Length: 449
Image 1 (tube, rainbow, N blue to C red):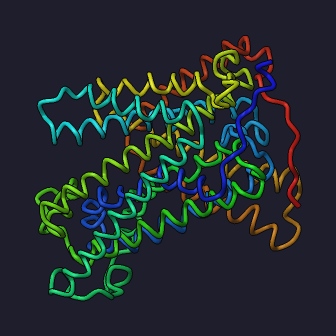
Image 2: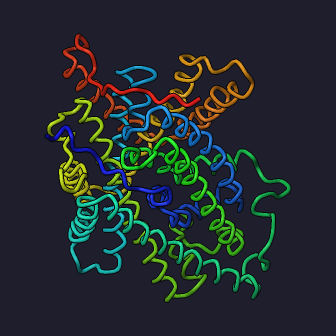
């Protein structure tokens, strides 16, 4: 009876896009502004343009693969089906670092923000409260989670709109650059391209999340058409938001000299632009962003675990379970909630270092999966359009990801290697030292011509 219970196909295009944007957290543009402005000499928007263009190549690769395999497994499924079952397991295992620990990071951030406001309240109270809200919203219906997420994302939009209005008013009064329109944040004589690329490598991590919408493929009617559009729109909408926010912030703060701590400039940005009242409103926006990202990431990882469980890569009875009434992977949702409670004991540096390794593994192999499927298997390289679309663009996407690999934090690399080693040992166990095949779901491809 359980085998006949499937995820409910009820999410539309913009509900998925908003979940992806919520995952990416529009307010994160303020958190990285001081660091990248110092790095680029006051050209953050230019670095965002470079980062957006780079990420759109990988977003296009996700779109191509979801047309072939419109299921919830994302990079795990694409690699397993096109390159190697063992590599597919490795990609899925590594991706769990990104997906599984981001809800924990958001819980940890909520504790940091709220503990600063209410220092007399024990930090664990905020973690438990945050995890409870996100888990309950995901447990009963994906539509409930999506609608709640829409509200949270729109509130962030409202904060950004008020911010832009205040900045425009300040610029008109002679603050900052003293003008609303200027090309200087994008292009200026003497600016360093190396510095812009270095800034873009930092900002690329703001785009983590556009790929997470692929995990909603089995909850989307006509996923073959809807999900590729949603992937591209998520990256594009997020990129436009980041560029807009960084442009107006850069115009108001041409350099970082006004900040006491450029690496934590977000509260000072709000204070200088709108005073104490706006700073409180701004802080509410950052908390809202944290909750939206936690909600969307919780949704995504529970679906990835479901697909790996359904494939019996991890125990199917637990991870492959779908609640017959709610049509959600309820046990996975609860499990992710319990894992997120580790935020009570973890520090932010350790938690965030676990995320980037898994994301870059996924990005790398999705680009390679396009080449493996379309070029090697389907032989779609014999005309100039296919050659560019299925070979050149994925190679550019993979090359950009390699730049990110070079700039990866050493802690991310070490923890990622340790996590991967654990995964390889587990794979050896379930395959009886590779004498048995890797479990996988048998499915038909959808060939897009």
